Image 1 (tube, helix red, strand yellow):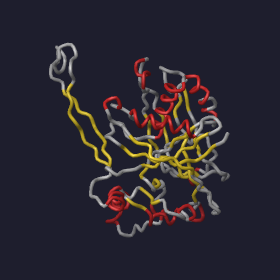
Image 2 (cartoon, rainbow, N blue to C red):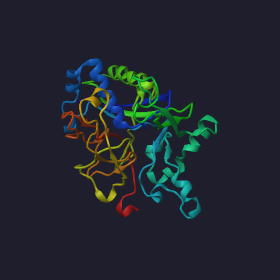
Image 3 (cartoon, rainbow, N blue to C red):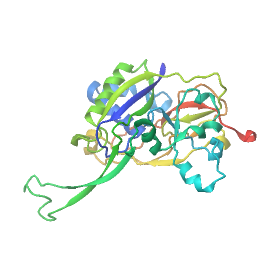
Image 4 (cartoon, helix red, strand yellow):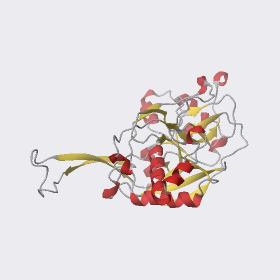
Length: 327
């Protein structure tokens, strides 16, 4: 295995119906590989995927030059909680400015680098436009047989769809781990660029979910500081790992996955739900080693395609937290 850590910068070019998610992006990449390079190539790449040998791990898209705020108690991030009236405002500061030297400092000091969605637009773009806006649009179905709205029985049948809009100058960082002995960075670039050009998620064929691939750069976040925990840059499945349970901090979420592309016509499009730890989780191992990702890949989640896998891996950064008696 020859794993490399990369930072991928993307810019939304349209509204989205499906929220940006690491595991959904991974699914898009797999389908694009199948369409462009063939099913045999995809099967080769997925060999060993559930045995801690992923060919690719995609992180959650996060605002440019930011990190997700760790799921640590606020006092462990150095926030001043003496003024109860400011606690709601503090909780909105869900991003950490990824400044030089941040990883050399203990998470106890990270509170001073915390920022909110409002701050993202104010500090970077000098605009009061919101970073992300959700609204609904009303549509109406059209019968291709009658040439009118609805069908013969129900007639007029409007429906609504939620749209997600990002700031006009929004750019996201998406960290990936790639095994270049199996899938080169040039191959990944071509595939990921195609995903953005065709569209991501629901209504991609209607012009939604478009994004531009701006750049891909190698990253090396190793420091001389002695770290003792991992910060996840995407949702993951940490079950079965050798963790210090008293020094792990995370919030769980349930992923209700669906098949994409032509698989939606092969049977039920719904997959079994998967319980995951959210982006920004902190996991402390029994023995700290240099890792680029943690988690596991899972299968047996679909009755339609038995070989379906779900990305339960997440890229990680090594950090230092106050543990046990140190607190």
